[in-house]
Amino acid sequence: MITACPDGRWGRDCQNKCECVNGASCDPFSGECRCTRGWRGKECSEECPPTHYGQDCGEECRCMNGGSCHHISGECHCAPGVRTCVLKESTEKNALMNAGVKMVVPAVRRLASAIAHRDG
Image 1 (tube, rainbow, N blue to C red):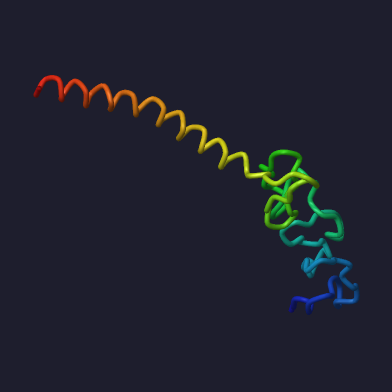
Image 2 (cartoon, rainbow, N blue to C red):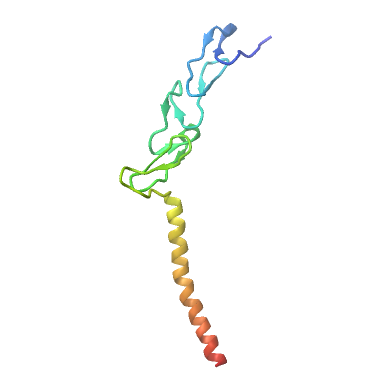
């Protein structure tokens, strides 16, 4: 009968001690570490690189103006002396919305003027 090892142990008769850190769990049969969000490496001792965050460091950071993101949450941290390091995605959405407004407002004004002139 095969039974799983208790947390922190792995291998035959659970004789091996897990070397995983930062809340990672270890496979009870192979001892391989399963890293938590924001961590990587054989023992999960390395933070995600500055350009990535999250589970398996699979999310891309979208900070601007030299900002870096938190290795777990992705929250932007501004560089010294910089007040805004907003997510690029938010800035891109705002730019698209502003471009749309700049096109729609003149068209609505022309339409309102044409209706007013027609009803005259």
